[in-house]
Length: 628
Image: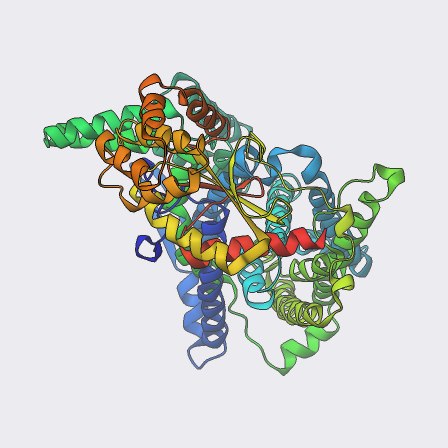
């Protein structure tokens, strides 16, 4: 079983677990981060309404100063959180934006057009509703508060209220969040920057240009990048532009390139040298070589995302969500255009804007763009996007002070609670709808992005299961790979459980540097296939991974009743080498770097390979396929 392996990624040079922060891990951290965010919000509210409420404001208004010679940087703790820690949060958001453009759902621009326009609609309508209630008033400057969608709350609550939703709902909501973050930061930079120091801004741009020079020249010092990044942040802060803009700008610079076979081979060589001579010098070289196979983007996300999810965002909520709530506050808020505009914008405007923009995009007169998810799930996701919280609180703090700020905070909290409750009712209602209603719009959806370069050919590939099965699972593996051997029993159980809904395909991908007998075993399987016994030999080779020398393999052929003379001749002549090489070439084109690597209906499976994880992915794909 692969249960013992946890989230293993087989023999890949990347650490056991996953590629650094794929979508699955990103969402998982947001789920648990949402719990901490909620807890911090409750603590802030209780603290601000307790007998010790004065200590709440006194603490966050405490000045913290940094001095170096005559230079001095002084801010209260709340501004250190909002301008400092939140810059780190948006830096990670920038990393995620770049990763999605390089390797995620945003890499195909036509496919992402509908979610992007939907997100823009989900920002425009709330802003217009807010302005309608605050037209001609000084409070109209708070229109940007209604634009944002909180990453942690939205994605975390989706898991709680939309547990049966398809993976595409999460991807759609993540796209909405990404576009909202970019737009919100743009609004902060353009609209909410009152006085700009041209000198400081020029210095910030100079530091920023230095980062680009470092990248182009191949300079790799983490300390140098860190110091220059602090320089960009500090100069941006002093320029008058909100410092969070520096965070997202730096984040999008970090490309999320996939590891290259050459880099992995180089790292593997260095680790073998360390194994032969375990000295501190070789240990350092081996560690650096392994780390450099993975992009800076993924390494930084892997390092920083837990900190932003579990520390930065909860601390931000603790610093900003504390609002004294009493009858006077509630009475004033009930008639405040700020509070009403925010609630109306987020709870009503968000879903109306997203749904309307999506509907318009799918009209033939406007291009007939593909629908991202069925209409029922789209409604639930649109309602959930009304949870503005983090970004909304940040813009509120920039826009207002005093009573208006209190009204804005109460509106944000109220809207977040209402949006979460409505989303729960929406997804619960979807579960009881007739199937034809829940799948309405499925026929207009785009086919999933395909990562598998070479389509399955039943005339060439080794296939187990019905040709018309709704799900095809392709495995690239090697017979000497221990993780592939562990996966074999899992796949057998999965095939039995799924029945005619699953078709299994095995393709050879021997890793010669770590599995010297894997190529011979692959040739043996093909020699057996020439005599009609591929799957029987396949099972024997995995069952005897510790004995794959030629003599043992010939014995396996004899036990299967093969023509041993012909079998041995095939091995000696290399007759099937081209067949094995075909699989290896298709794997390389598909981005396979290690074994086992799985593709489910052409999409690369990211994450754990245990029975439950694979079964969940296959069942989700089967449900989606039937919907079409």
